[in-house]
Image 1 (cartoon, helix red, strand yellow):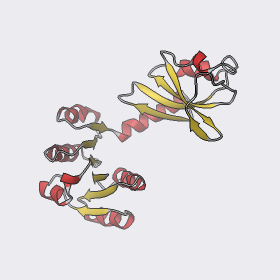
Image 2 (cartoon, helix red, strand yellow):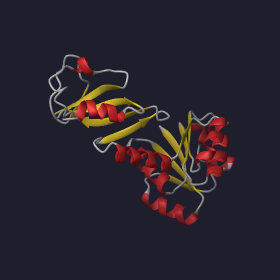
Image 3 (cartoon, helix red, strand yellow):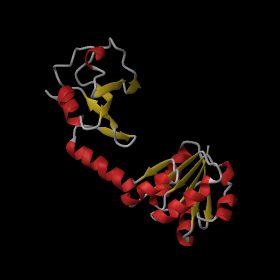
Length: 217
């Protein structure tokens, strides 16, 4: 898979490294010459110093072959313009970072596939950990309609029951459990043991209710 990332700041650099670890071919575009040199020395990828809002530069990065274009700069206007330009090259997936939540609708209206605010996502995750300190891991899905959390079952009222007796419900679904450190799909007749670590798909707004049911002593 080939991804072009615009922006060599902390977000763009971290994303590039993560995708490289997953086997992606990466080209990173950065218009600041000093930052461009720093990134080029750290990143095992092609780094182009230039303006990602230039059609000529995008074509030099082989935008026609890209599976992903991801705009990660802290400048919403630059991210928006580059994504609009990229649309004419039929890139399969276009993703943009947005810093100002008020700009999110404008990004969506021009047909950008995914709009992400790292700042808002981080704040949401921090709030969830404050309000749900027992959740060891949390992932927000879609527009925040559901979350996947990791939880350890400690409520004696559910210990010894079968998974099919307590899941799924309208509020949650136990989708995985851990056995000897490995993630496995629970079978309906599997018995729940005390201290069992599980992954749960939870409907928004029901986290505390689910936690009380599964973790309350």
